[in-house]
Image (cartoon, rainbow over all chains, first blue to last red):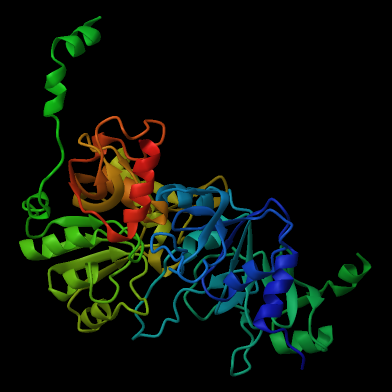
Length: 219
Length: 251
């Protein structure tokens, strides 16, 4: 079965981010999306520790310990970028000013509940960071994750078995197999990235899916 | 005009307002056992390491610490934890690759953790500084971190009641400050500094450079001095070049 690599998934997500969008890319795999945003488009990257207009990693030797992203990696600021304090930064999120956020996930439920902050393991030290604010904050919440766990279980589930980060907050899921919208009617498959057909995807996923791939092709 | 007369009559009166402290030790001397202390910084960006070192030396115990994280490596906040001065930490993201000091204390049951989503943490601090008695936020609704909290449906959306977070002291790092306590910050080291300054009874700020009153452009002051009680200069080696070029520009 053909699967997209993480980089290919990031590239696919990047195609759907339009010019002028204010975007937060979550820690981990979603940060790869930044590498695929078209250079000729002006897109504003937000980092919750207080910057808009985040640029790429600095050249070696140019790192500044006071210019970092939410993952505490060294970054740069683009011309026209801005710094602000934490309360303003989360007002941008919670206040619905961000157009998109792209998050990693352990699981997404059929109704768009998101689980990405805690495995629930009794010995795990919990940490949440900005995950719960991001989940409910952006106008469009996109999730980017592998379709199946290493054990072959679908990460799209009837209900999350991991502790949830937000309720009914996910709008779209990009996996290594498909792009799926969470709608009032249910989960609608818009695009299949693999060499399997809708029925095979449905079987792998194990929750009700609506075939929207014809409409996508017609459009 | 009364105001003009007052200024004209005794300008020197205003020279007496001086929030500059001469030593780190004196700036934290009155932190009491059991105090709630906010510490600025996101990871190590904006962490007031020298003030924390002074607090360790000062010896206050049983502290409640408010920070985004729970310390990195063995320095700053991690060193305070390692010295066993902290009873409880209120933060959003304790677990990091280099948070081994916290991790060990937590697993041994020797430190209490109150985990707060980062935006709720920021807003609880802001609310305290702004005199707000509580607020409804959509963040964390329906999750473990909202269990037992009052909720309300407002215009079709679910919200959770959160309370303000006050502190006895805030230890903050800023870039430049003057003797009235006006502050500007540097890049993403700003993070929690401005809101923590407003939420604490006593805000203690280490600045890379103390500048004369009037040198900070009033249009760009981020934290007005009313929120700041103490300022102490702690030159930062990494900023020396930038400070030199900034003062060259100013001159």
